[in-house]
Length: 55
Image (cartoon, rainbow, N blue to C red):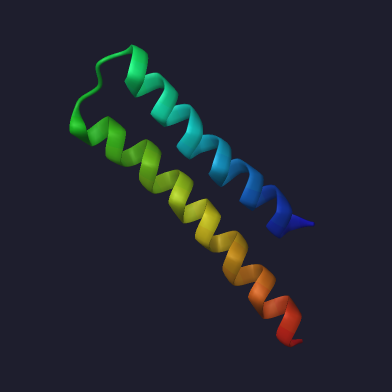
């Protein structure tokens, strides 16, 4: 259940950051933080799901 939440939060964070950068101007640091956080959550969800399958 926790991995599904991280997966959804990661995908939404990346998508929202892409939408916001289309309409507003952000510096590179802000874009990187938003995209990096989303990808980090996405990878965390995949790693947790992978560990639960092995157990």
